[in-house]
Structure formats: structure tokens, C-alpha cells
Amino acid sequence: MNPPVLDIHKILKKLPHRYPFLLVDRVIEFEKDKRLKALKNVTINEPFFGGHFPAHPVMPGVLILEALAQTAALLSFESAGQDISDDMVVYFVGIDGARFKRPVEPGDQLILEATLDRSRAGIYKYKVRASVDGETAVEAELMCTMRQFS
Image (cartoon, rainbow, N blue to C red; front, side, top):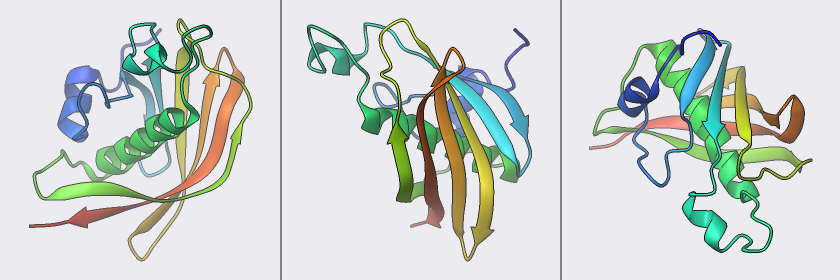
């Protein structure tokens, strides 16, 4: 595997999320203003597996969507050359066409892909896909916006 485009230390400078809600471990591909590919190593130590489900642990779909939203935010921040600041946040504003096609289990390596579809009036629309071993787990279209607050 090639060296990461962004390792965890650089991701921590781009996203405000922290354990247990930081869901991206590494960025492996990046094309400015176009696409970003990242990964999340899913382990049995994840806090949600204790209750979802104890007899057959499955990563909650909403957390896979959150991982994809974080991937989209990384695409936006990295394309803009920005690190996080105390007065800037990327908000998730919509999901269209979410489809869950395969469960994600402990031991899986989740590949997260975000492609910028369009940007208009401060709203960014992304096509996103999460896969395991080349098989689609989740696909959707996400809408996000960057907001500065004081």
C-alpha cells in the first residue's frame, strides 16, 4: 500500500471529531475539488459493538454514514487547504438515496469514498460509497455546508 495522503495526525488537524466519534483513520487518495478515498479499520473494541448487537456485532448504518460525511468534510477542507478552527464547522444538511447493501463487522476494513458532485450557494453535494473488499456496503448522496460562527 502507498503511504497515506493524510495520516491520523493530519486528519486530527482537519476534523474536529475525537474518539469515539472520529471515524476516519487514514486518507489514501485525494484529487483536489474532485474526490477523496479514506479508510476506517473496524475493530471489536468499537464502543457501539457492545450493544449493536452482542451476539452478532454489526456497525450501525448511521455511523457508516457519519464516516462518509467525515470523508466528505475532509475532501472540502483538504481542497480548500484549511485546517479546523474554533469558528468553522461542516454541517451535514441532507441525505438522499441511502442504500445499505452489506453489513460491516469487526475485522472489516471500510473503504470510504467521497466525490464532489456539485457546489452551489454554500451547499456541497457529494456522491459517497463505503465498501469492504470491493463490495458496496453503503451508498448515498450527502449534502453539507460549512458555517463560520463566533
